[in-house]
Image 1 (tube, rainbow, N blue to C red):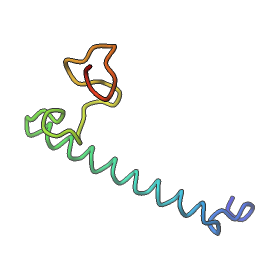
Image 2 (image 1 turned 120 degrees about the vertical axis):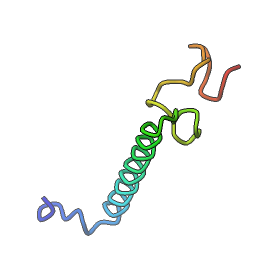
Image 3 (image 1 turned 60 degrees about the vertical axis):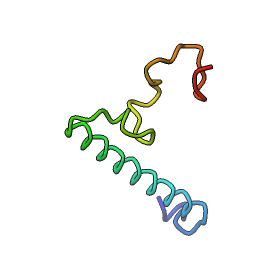
Image 4 (image 1 turned 180 degrees about the vertical axis):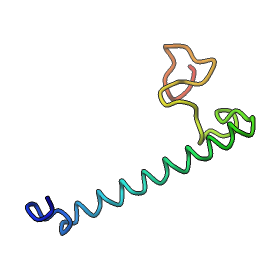
Length: 72
């Protein structure tokens, strides 16, 4: 595919490649930290705001009308 489109020679491909690589690395590291905290018996959602629970699930105590900025 690279022979036809020569993607690796474009700057936009380089930016895309490194963005995906960094995103994958952050995801793997955060999953490892989350797993270690879970195995240690701690609740990762209350340990740090940087390690939330499942994506899209708001913290306890939030109503359906609250925004992501926090309860009104």
